Image (cartoon, rainbow, N blue to C red; front, side, top):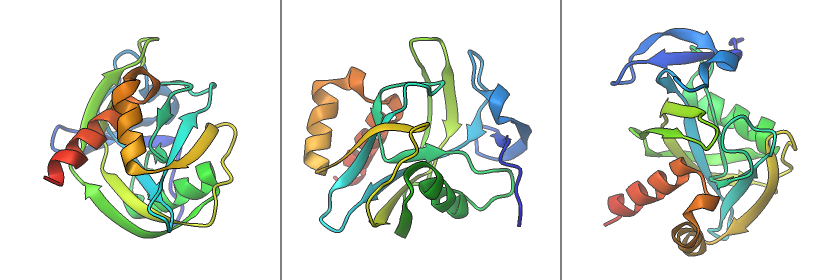
Length: 176
């Protein structure tokens, strides 16, 4: 099936679809709530992949973040969108895709005034191979341990995306 990936799914506070909007026009200073996803990719050694957003990205350019994020096209099953985006952004195939924060939602404003406002289920997956990222999406990448990642985010929060901060906080609370 073909999906229109130029559109994003607008949603209400409960995640119920409300309609669509062009992806190119949805992020700004008054971004409507829309559907997205995040994924934390692990390797066979239990390390997690972190990526540094390309400097040409419209929101949070140059910051380190979780492995990758994206938007499902309207009507596209979210698990299909996660796998598609892993191939497009990181050149990776995924195994063991598991929801870890299915109800995650956040709103954040970057230094330029751009707003992210997303219902953003979070997944964990295992990488099948090594990343070969698109330079339009990722400027750097690194495998690290979960403990080293948490330490780095606490030590230099400004260097990481706000959604990664929030996800790590919620994952830590969920494991208590």
